[in-house]
Image 1 (cartoon, rainbow, N blue to C red):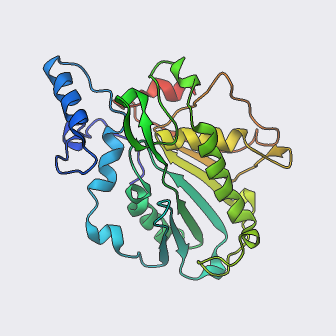
Image 2: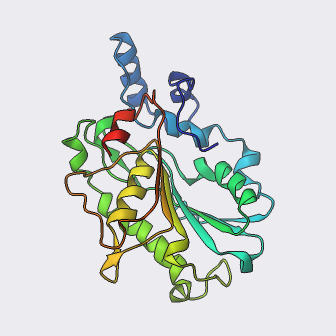
Length: 269
């Protein structure tokens, strides 16, 4: 379920759920232009947008066995907690890709929670903002993407704000008592070494950069690990590993024939 995009995945049928409320006239016009001139579409959200839109209502709103689902209607945050909160001993923070929301990864998180009943899954949703590369079309995005070349990849406006969001989620797991009475009830304190940052595509880029550069008390986070699915390293020229995070395990998975984020981006990362 968490495998990177495969060659057999269709691009156009996924991008054209015509009844999808987020599909604007501007997007349709641009797509028609691309087809007319036989140009390859550059919509980076083509493969991630459909993940949530293709989920059935049963999967969207039915709790999984062995886990409780909590939703924050204000910021789109979804949290899956172990049915027995006393068994909670690890946390995975999973970031979606460009144009998607936390709902798009609820189904995989439900599946994993059944296999790992001691793990809490935290699924944040990116703020909706214009993306330059996609003609200024507003969509959930962790940061702005100006272009696909390496020079454009150094800008990433909004990346710092998103890193602060993810870092606050990490701190919430380590110091739950500082948040007062949680609507989830009593929460176990989870050590940094029991927290995994994971993400798909743009979310993978966010997880990688956050996990390796952010600090706590002047040293690296020292997380249990980082999982990058079809992602890449943003701001590579500014990238510097925080002292203490050099040995953080990283699993970086990428499809060889990914049409959205080329595998070369993973190799360069």
